[in-house]
Image (tube, rainbow, N blue to C red; front, side, top):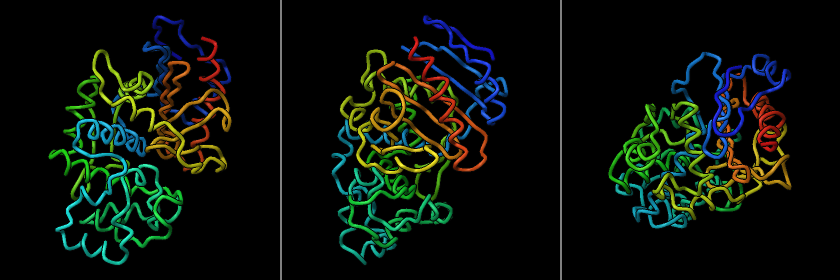
Length: 326
């Protein structure tokens, strides 16, 4: 495995870890600590943008935090409907059946606790992608639970957030990101797909490992990049706070607790120091370990939802112990 050394000694994976990469269909590994690259490996020898699937949600969370910091969005407790086009008759019709829908907040969408009926593991997602009115489609789902009470993984909620961000900022989410997040961090090129009426907020981003790691480094640094506070520090802290046990007890342990569109692995529940992570289907991870000033990206071929455990085990059994040793 080729590695790149920074100020710290380069990380060297043992023979067991080297064998894991091919056996477990790992496509890329990138590790940084204290802002320095300690390991970089790609099965193809390059680091071109590729799909990170639901890691997109954590990028969207950062953009929502930036918009709140700029005053474009009032706050996480604002109802999402305040930022949607209620003059659209399809949306108005979707909201008519249950008055509680108007009270669904940005925070509830970020924590996947909107209460909207959304069957396990995002089953309505494909239908959402085909819809010509995504906001009406999502809010047209019946309320299965009181908003704020029950966790249900819901990419539709992410789409509502993306639509709200675009209406609040007056620009596409991709352009907003280029101006206020990707640009300041030197991220690019990226690709970000769109659905009808908005950027694909829950799964549409393609980005390189090094660029995804920059988001993790930004969060290790409390939202600050060089001399600029890119994401409000209080938003970074709020995002990485466990707000629901979510899928902490799911087997295999590919998930964790949930914050603001970030998964959280607290020390008293999972191995190692506290860390949080962005997660994409099949084993695309961005791990952030503030205690160690460390960030790790693991990319994997798509072989099914539960095969993501391979990426998680690589991190917990090989990368994390090496980072703790310094």
